[in-house]
Length: 306
Image (cartoon, rainbow, N blue to C red):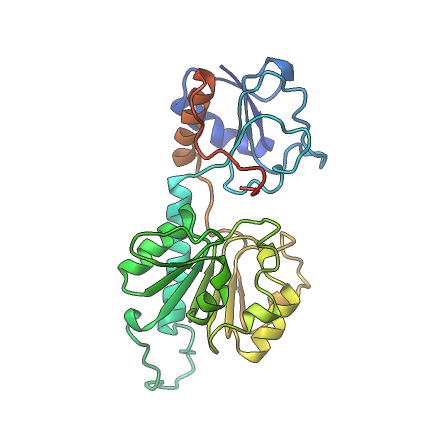
């Protein structure tokens, strides 16, 4: 099985050994006649000359396996006619859960309310987790993992998704009930993909539905938030604080107002990394399925964009 590694050169040393260990039968290559490859492994940033990837010459390929969870950078590529699968990596889900749980706990406990200035602040007593409402926007693999962790800690978790598909143990609301989901969100966690229906979902109108003093944690996509509307909303205290890991432009420019706003914490897109050790077996399984004509895992719905 000949597989083309369509990813930046800097990723090769980490991915090649993991992929070969998970799938010894592959011949993994970074160059060669495109018509001779059975599948592609793709990561954003390729090709490195800044041009859009041309999938048309890969006439024999039965699969394009993304090495990232997000596929918005290629799903609309007109040359991409091969089946496209996104990465659903157990390590990525674990990392996202740890990130969101950590920041949710920090907000819940008010851990930033204690400046080390010699002042004894004994007037801030947080409720128990059972007295705190957390809403998660996006109840896919990542959202369900975060919901399970936060429910286990005792939080009152509400899930929201466009479909409203039920999730055991979590109150799940459908797309039409976004206002209700936001009104419950003393802590709001955003894990939605970038699609036409989710862009600017959090805008002046919807942010105003949050409880005063709420905390927003966005580890989904930067396009979910109207940035100017968020800054104005922070100035009004709805939300009171935003932890942002993803942005419309990355790296976030040094002069961007998020860096200097007292109500914003910026983290540099580190909430959940795809780790070759846990992701390579997922890619290997799909490569084997493609070669034997079996149903593929995590096949992207082109109409929905994920």
